Image 1 (cartoon, helix red, strand yellow):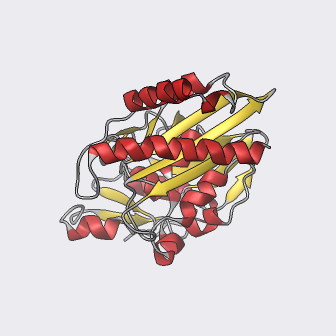
Image 2: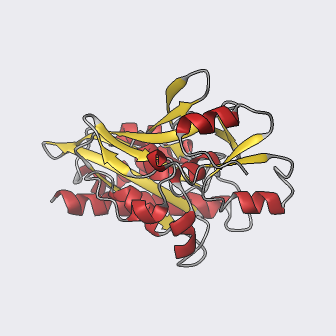
Length: 279
């Protein structure tokens, strides 16, 4: 186990063969239990303080990749209530105290609760290697179950959120009230102009091979008022649009049909909650 104190040192170590970054290790222990990464050397990020914390910048907010969910739960990003809400239902208190937002992204689970609001808030990722530093959108970085666009030797250092003036909300459905893997998770961001939606984003987890944006449903909502959303014809069109955005499957937690039903009900719930906030 290597224990660097700075990002530059960690990146040099990760350039070696069969090296893996280790953050909160809440997923790594599970992976090792199933036989993965047993012959790797680990580069612990625990001592690198610059990877921790939430900071306001000139153009938005930065979240260090080693920031725990307990810290995010207490955060007060004005437009980011969806992020603190998702952190508050992330596993048990022990997991929230140890698990990191960077690890949650890189595990690339379709049910990653932390990823859902980040995608709705149009997060970007800063990635550093010996060769270069690059910034990429979170959307498109997740390639499938357990697969990301992280290149060999790269380190995820921070998550960047652009400044926004709207509101966001997160809701999760699971088989029990606490410490449950999502059956469906959803974050919605809205901003209004003259009581009509001028900006929106809907992100969903556990309804496709990766966390996804519901772009068709977003397009339908643009320009609409909350009053128009009460029209049955509008609701029916919104439902059909959302169903084209998601690709749920049957598994041990829920059927695909249940996920479709709960996804639309969740969207109506989240829109109602945001309507209440904008009054």
